[in-house]
Image 1: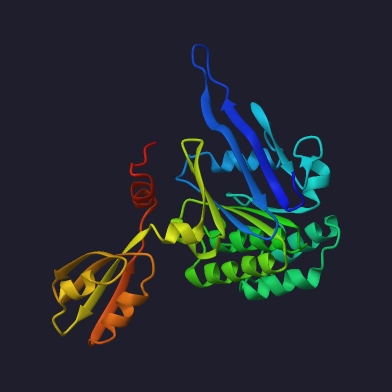
Image 2: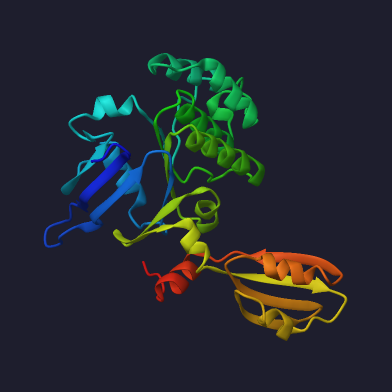
Length: 306
């Protein structure tokens, strides 16, 4: 492992035990990938693809059938205690002490973590708009998620592992979370972010690994994905728009007249379309993001399956 590699999986495989006559389910199949220091690394795949299994193996919560994980050059199983001092984790389901307030939970966890600055925890709560004087049992799902984010970040670990971090959060809080993990990256720390939401990964990640049915499909830079992914742009206008004008622009694959406007399929940058549209009186503009299934169809030329 080189100095800049923070996390590495080597032929990581997990098969869950089956019943008599059945071999069991293969949840992860010979996963090999590396995550570099100072990057936000996305781990993308539909629900059931094996993302959470991977994270549990990284954290030594379950053991691999084959293969291994190394974090900061240490073995994830043999050196699990040392690794956990350097890692912050947000699981897909946040379970904390219901009888405590958010403030009490953070105080307790901060005392357990070397180098934890409780003032930073309070700053995070303010930025995420979380009232810490409420008991955990009375928190909404979104507020429990906020508390989980704070406990993962507050001791400023060198590696953060997030499993579906923005699930249950409103768009404004999701935006704040994205700002926070960009700050982590700017400080030279590393983020591993698992999600099934393509737009979430696209907004913040430097690279992304694509997992399907437990098998790694590819590892790509986000800039490369953006050159392939298409979006549908809908322009609503009082003036008639000519599809041929838009078809002549770079990155435009299709343009169709619709009632009161035009619908345009764009790959790559939206800038040429926006500049041409600015010549007309536009009443409304919307951009339809591709779904995860669309992503697989356009990037790999095949549909997803369970």
